View 1 (cartoon, rainbow, N blue to C red):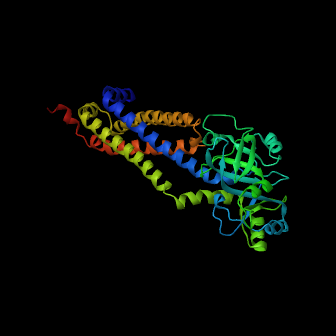
View 2: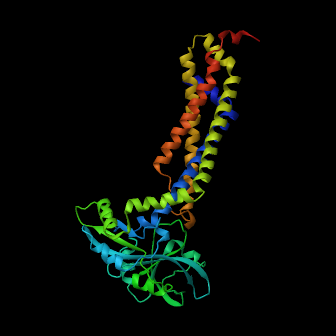
View 3: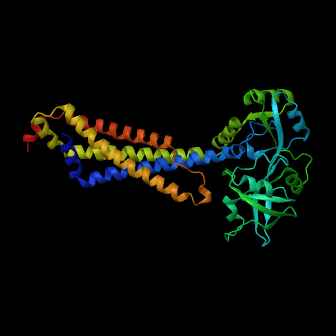
Length: 379
């Protein structure tokens, strides 16, 4: 029966190819959009996830995510250090400034100031060289991913002199930071240098990064810091999640991608259901002949399901291949850095496609199951 089912399916090449490419396009649309959406959400968490050493972030109570830090008093650093369970606590500056090149080109920059002694907050990539380079006077370590937005000629930025707020800054080394939702180049300096070259304000401390003592849970330490200092304190995981939630609740990104993903599902349903229905309608006499020679409804149902699963799996494979090729090609584009095809997306898309083709097959085959075998003898 399986062989007959495949011959019937492959005998109508137009509908067979239409089913496959319809499902492939729907799979491509769904998985590509979900992968990009997940990547964008990850960008919201990356400013926190890039700081591996900190268990807890302490900040002004009004702060919602890492890119909108509000300055707090330097005295808060010492108050946090006095909380029971704190192994160490260091200052962390994060703000936006403008960098001007020797050629006069101007670009926005995310400036990060890390603790002078421990350098907590530097990305692990090229860490030893970056840590040595950043100790110089007004020395900056620049994220190499978006260097092209400052120098479009593809030059190596190491050794370049730039100007920030009328201060000369030397690009002493490069690193590779995680991409962020702000989409700006990222530069790292010592905390004292960063607050010196930025516009004067009464307070410059953006966050206090805290490491818990052994045996002290970060969540419990965060509660102690809040109770004793009045600051907001969040664990690394919770604060990273806050960056994701900020994107979800304050942008139109979820709605935009939701519409695109929904269109993929609609395309898959419409193409699969209509094409299968037309295929079965045009083969009613063939099914009638099979019933006339003793083929049971259960066997016919198995034949239709086999046909549907074949086109579903084939189309799904082509669609996933297209998404994988797109994301592989996007690795060289800094604007798409960090977009990955996660296994959960693959499994979810497979379940969705197989559910659609099986449901479409079951709806279409009802006419065959009720078919009178005598139809084969009629004109």
